[in-house]
Image: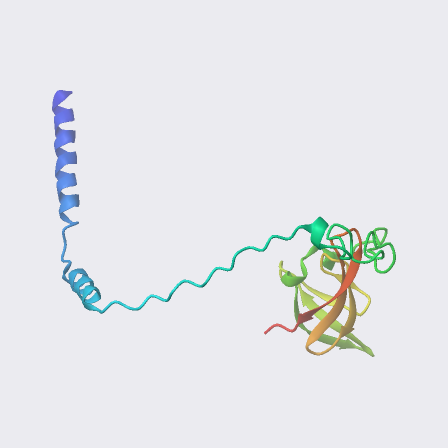
Length: 174
């Protein structure tokens, strides 16, 4: 048993010596690069930009007649109850399962007088859409389909309890 341990230790020692001998290769190109870099003249360092001191604003004393930053701008903005709202009772369409940026327009199709937009999903399937269909995860209703893009209006949260409409488009991909 001792002989096998001695053989294993000898083998490990020999392999370590061979492995470490490979680390001392030719480094002339590295030395040349370091010498060239050191020989270059030093550049001028641009001065630091001037730092302007912070101006203290005491809201109670200095803000007479100014709008409070803790109250919404207009009464309509606080808890906007009118305007656009997502219809939560509406049946969801298949293309609403995908983020809008993962959908790509791949062409159009005419059937009779109707022009369909062809939309490819991230799973590779192609779907026909017409104005009035929904797609994307922000209640995006398709308004118009042209040869080069599908335009839609999304309903997104305004961050203070209401919703706003945002124009979006899916362009023809190559």
